[in-house]
Length: 260
Ligand code: PEP
Figure 1 (tube, rainbow, N blue to C red):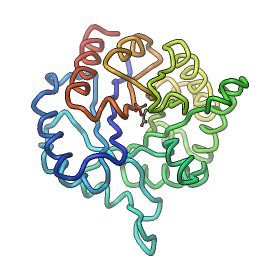
Figure 2 (cartoon, protein in one colour):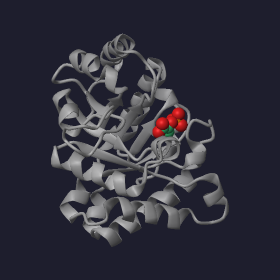
Figure 3 (tube, protein in one colour):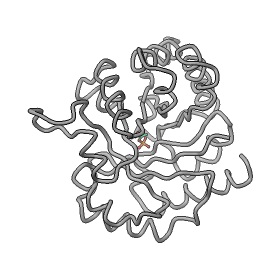
Figure 4 (tube, rainbow, N blue to C red):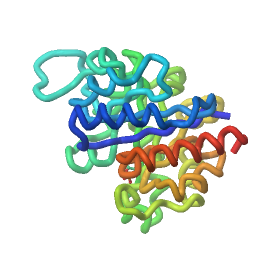
């Protein structure tokens, strides 16, 4: 079974000191380490250092970033590179989030360059893909997911693709309180796995973790993870509160320890 992954995407929330206080409390309250689950928090860039200081080397919580640029250094005002993130203790980086695509015009060619740069520097990319409500309503969800996946990973070797985690995030479910049903998520995950098999191989498709993201809560996480297609979650709002993060972590740890 693939190791479950729970990622908290804090977006543009929490100052460096608020983030450090949150990470300190979360470290104390997370359930005992479970071999079947990994936890990641992705604070804003400005809070990476303060959170890194709080997380001890053996902490069950790993650090992630919400984006990065593909060059290592140079005249790219406002950007942050993979070596900079590595130096601050990041292990993961979220790439291609729908807010980056819709608000900042990010497209598959730049996402592809970012994934390549992340892998080159030993960061684990979490590639976000997902359809809009209009695309779901007109029946093009499978095509959209397949196209986004292919474009973002085109030209990659199988070994490179094996280093990528995919997050299925229907745009209509992000921050709306209207999660996809478990059935909708499972169908999308199957589509993504088929596309991975076509792009890389069946073995890589079956080894790749695919997370669900979009209005995940302590109430719906158990149902979502009841399918072996769903390997974890990328969570925004519900990960901004220690209480709900801890509850989600407890549900996932329990589910994984009984082999769900
Ligand atoms: C996200 O930011 O990726 C996300 C899924 O947000 P939320 O959980 O708030 O819908």
